[in-house]
Length: 273
Picture (tube, rainbow, N blue to C red):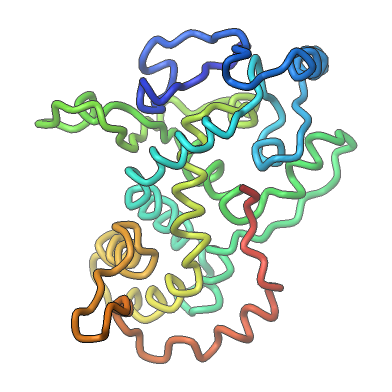
């Protein structure tokens, strides 16, 4: 199947939702003839080879090598959806945690996993790196039918074309689709990296304190994403502290286990950029 590419002109939204078709490589994007020849060879093999993060997240890249411009566009879209992405991913992970203890929450947020070798070199390489947000954006979002759509198409009262996270459980993708590069999937990955991966320790500490006595789990998780994972941006500067950023909402007992957890986990946040 041909890859559907997503230019920022269409807000990085999934091709099927907007009727976008695949395009051949464009040398203006920095794609050389050598790159085209290599991609043609890889396409015949059904694999993608490379050294940037996309090549560790997917098995298949069709038509066009991801460029630095593509990554910048994906990050721009990720900035618009990271609160929703953080809330959806953390909500799914909390349901998988053995308990609401800080260590158990930290474990699921970290996303460590072991996979048996299949003998397929490209597939095994992808699985070797399927940790942290390299794992979460696929398992908790794409596999569960999440995509990006224009907000006006999915939220009553909205008439803008900004990207919105949307779930359609009847449209869960095939395994090959999940393992194929599309720019909108990178938007989900970067949104996860900017929140769940970067602030995983703070999230675990906050959730371990807030969840046991809370009645609205979704609201607690959303607050954690906003305050601890900073999905709304960095806290405003405190005018009384000479421009120093305000600290997140303090969590009783926070930090007591942080060093031990980090030592056990080896400090690996997962997810190549």
